[in-house]
Image (cartoon, rainbow, N blue to C red; front, side):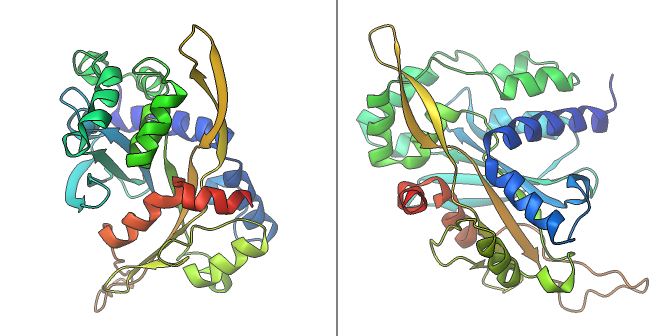
Length: 303
C-alpha cells in the first residue's frame, strides 16, 4: 500500500497541472506576486483550499466523491446549505497542515423542475454504480485520471442552455464534471503591504485581473475573521454534441482563482508565540463565490 500522503500529493499535483493550463488567471496572479517580490516561486504559495462541484444523484454526489479524500486522511467537517441555489456542501480538513482544505458542494437535483431533473438524469443515469468504488484509491495517477475523465456523454448545447436558465451550477457541472473549480491563495502570511484581502484586491486589479463583485469584492464572514475574494471565471471553448453526430463549439465559464485572509482568533496566542487563525468556511461568503462562474459576472468580464 502506497503512503497516503504520497498518493495525495500525486492527486493534487495532477489537479493543479491541468487547472493551471485551463485558467490563465492562475499564471497572471502568480506572475504578479513574483514580480512584486511577494513569493520567489509557485512553491511558496499557501493553498488555503480547493473546491469541487458534484451532482446530487444516487450514484454520485458528495457521498461518492468524498471517499477519495477521506481515504487520503482528510476529516469531514461542517455542513453548509445554500437554499436559493439548491446546494449542500461540506468541508474537509487535511491530514497535514501543508495540504489544502477541501470544499465539496452538491446540487440538490430533486429540488429542480421535472424538466431539469430529466435532462440531468439522462446523463447521470449512464453512471450505473458508484465509480469511486471501482478505483484503486492508493493509485494517485489513476485517481487523477478519473478526476479528469468524462463521467457521461458530451452534453448538447440546448441541454446546457436549458439547465443554465434554472441553475448555472447545474450547467457548469453537466459539462465540466469533476474539473477543479478553483484553488485559493492565502494572503495573511504575505508581506504587510499585501496581507489583507483589501490590499490584495487593489494589487490584483492594478495588475488587470477582474474580480467577482457579487456581494462586494471582499466577502466577509459574520465574525469578521474570514475574508475572501475571487477572480471571475475564465471563458473556455467547449465542444458540444450537435445532436447530428457532430460537434459544435461555444464559449462557457471554466474555473477561477480565489483568495483568502484568515484572521487570528481572539485570545489564541500560545506560549510558544504561535496563534490560531479562523478555520472552516462561511456560507454567506461561499454563496457569492459560487457566482464567479455565473453569467452576471462572466458577461461583465467580457465587456
